[in-house]
Image 1: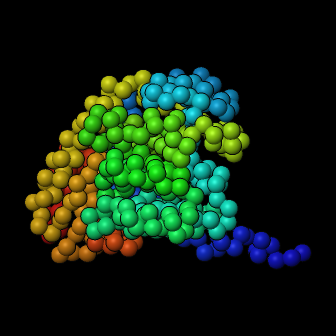
Image 2 (image 1 turned 180 degrees about the horizontal axis):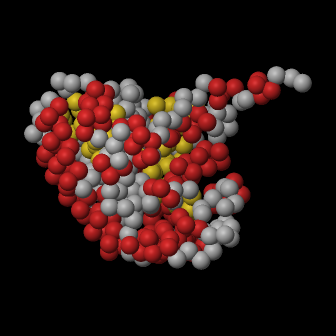
Image 3 (image 1 turned 180 degrees about the vertical axis):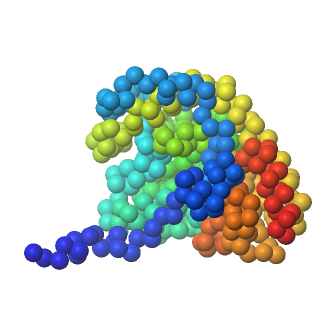
Length: 369
């Protein structure tokens, strides 16, 4: 028998691990605090949770013992009505993360390129490397805006198949301009527009900002969305995407047969049916984002960037950002995100919580510095 340890695909040996956010039970043990005593502002989750209709739908699930519809027909029908996009070009997934990986499995041959604009969502580079692709980073400018001319040069030089762009961007919350998006769509590359946070932009539920309605007229545009943030369904892992019609036959063949479970599907449909409630929740979070930014501005050693999402990225001076993160967690049970990556070592990202969460954070910051 040969050395079975050598059978692992070689590119995976050097793959940097993705660092996920820890669940409440792990955090409680680590911090020595109950889950109720932890203020979780590190993962951009919706602190208000799902709508009452979702809780009712989950309590009344009729067939949890039966495999789900492999085509998620009821959900896609509801999504079509919600987005105005034909259900024939909609595909649901176990979070938008699954759809990111599915696209890369669909298009990448080993060594082929994907373009990203860091700092940005880490799953783009992680999944590219997981699928034996090459990541072409075009760093953002000092204010986290895109370097459009550098992107255009990179496309000419490396010929990437896909360009992943978060709109709003994670971790800074900025939105590309409509002119920038038009320029990117003119490039010979598939633009994957990740609108995970679009509902928190300043127009109502992102309906005037989203590009999802253009997918049917663009052969190189994919738009991804999720229920994790605005609808409070992060724990159920449910997202969806709109894809050009020519992609759909291969996407259907490539996805896992039962990728969306019955609970997630029912919760997503109930969320769509309770838009009035969720619109109100989103409005509260946008208002609290403004209050949080104003409160943070009291501290001369914190500079928060403008954000169109449910989080604020803040530059930290006078104290190391990693130390500030650790102090907030250990002394006050307040969790914020710190990224140990180029351009972000002196930054923290703070999710927008409830008003009492903002008050607790500001009190803790006053105590620390």
